[in-house]
Image (cartoon, rainbow, N blue to C red; front, side):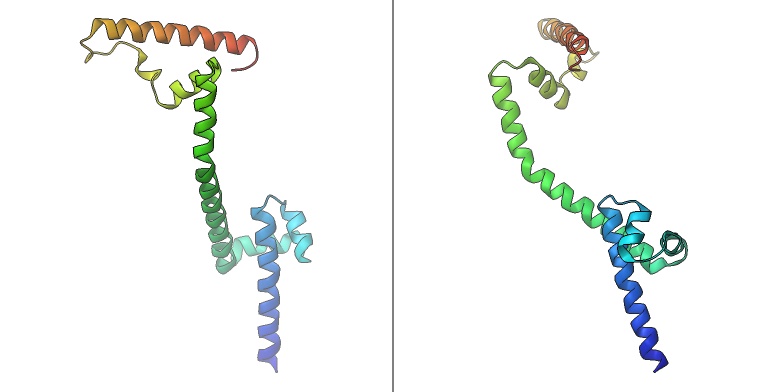
Length: 144
């Protein structure tokens, strides 16, 4: 009889911990998570400190959530690129600067030792100067 009661207590605690874990990984405070599970917040802190199984499940759920977010972001990346392409095609300078920064073109706009094409070097310098000027303009307008 004592074993059944202990097993029920353990299963009940596991359910409470799972409620706390879901609340925490979705942004709830420790107090709100504890309240949702019907435990005191000091209990949650004790689990974090002393219950390795709870800590492992919490860490695993956080990693799962990060993976879910990464998959969802990757799924919309193609649409984001298409939106940027359309904006650039329509002459949107801010979008153009975003693309240039993303591909590292602005980092390479400075002359470097290995470059041997003077025309290309001048074009890169001009691009860097224009981009810096546009960035300052965006910053003055509160857009950058």
